[in-house]
Amino acid sequence: MSLDSKVPPARRIFLSRIGGASGAALALPALLGGLAPSPVPAQAATAVASGAQTRPAGYLSLGPQEGACVEALINVMCPADALTPNGVDCGLHVYIDRQLAGAWGRGDQLYRQGPWHPGKPQHGYQSPLTPEQHFKEGIAVLRHETQRRTGKAIEQLEPAPLDSLLQDVAAGRCDDDPRFPLGAWFNDAFYPLFVQACFADPIYGGNRDKVFWRSVGFPGLPALHARNVVEFRGRPVPVAATPQSIEDFS
Image 1 (cartoon, one colour):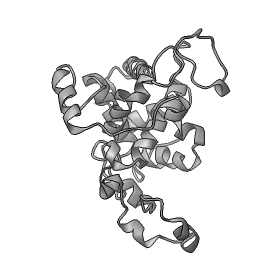
Image 2 (cartoon, one colour):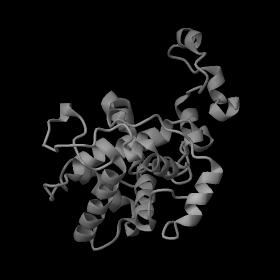
Image 3 (cartoon, helix red, strand yellow):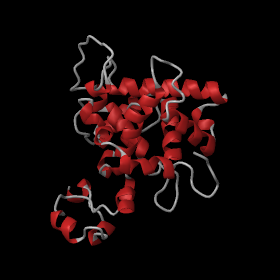
Image 4 (cartoon, one colour):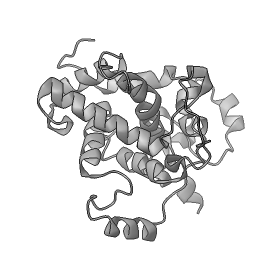
């Protein structure tokens, strides 16, 4: 797909995939046996961050290079425009980091005893790695592939070449390591977490200020909109202008 100066490169491609994304991809934590996401108490986040001197303040799982890579990726997938701020300003990296650091990232509900035989896609997640380890392995492979192809780190690339690189990754054109196909990692791990970060309740770190809910006209919580679905089908819901999150009911 060609890049041009008239349309922001990444949003039209990556966010446009959301409408056609499969339920399997959007339910990644459930498919991998993870628990529902849970917010990290502020005092716990402070304690963990202060004890992890190799990580930037605020990160619970990602290291400095991993965090820089994730931030660069989400900013090119969600650039600042009339719809939302950029991905970092929307807190998408925070959501991803919290998921990796929590029960889902640890694989608390995964079967971890093996044996580890190659499986078919319908067999679900087949790996001795936890989701956190799998995610980080993908970041490492992507960083290596980017350095090999461009001579630069991911965070050093301009938006247009990074966007082009991600198109190749998503299409499987960077699967040079048969032991770890980047295309499957991006489509089945990174991208679903990115989508969840966009549309999850802000209490979990992403969708800051409910910007994505506002952009699609989602009224938020609680689940009291059954009549609105019927009454306003195909039309904007008035209460969507001020969507309500979990914190609004706390």
